[in-house]
Image (cartoon, rainbow, N blue to C red; front, top):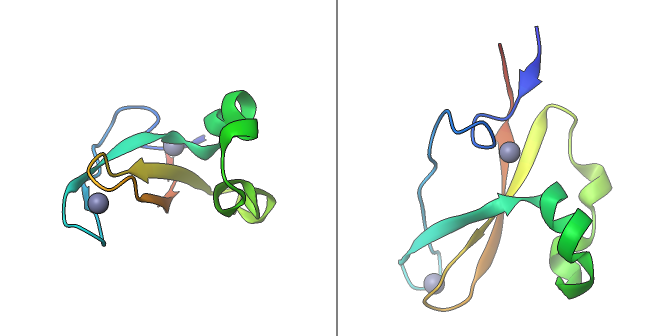
Length: 80
Ligand SMILES: [Zn+2]
Ligand SMILES: [Zn+2]
């Protein structure tokens, strides 16, 4: 058995509406990918507390192209 994130593995697509403007937000990727490659470009609101993420959750960043709102969503990993 293995714990995997269903979004990272393209098993499901999550759709979220932007809480600010109602536009559909895009999955910008898992936060650990951001942290590896782009951490210097991210605001503190995204990079802070990454260590608090539960081991059985994958935190994704959803981005609204319309108003540039970013939202973090904790995705429960599933066992396969
Ligand atoms: Zn993921
Ligand atoms: Zn928006």
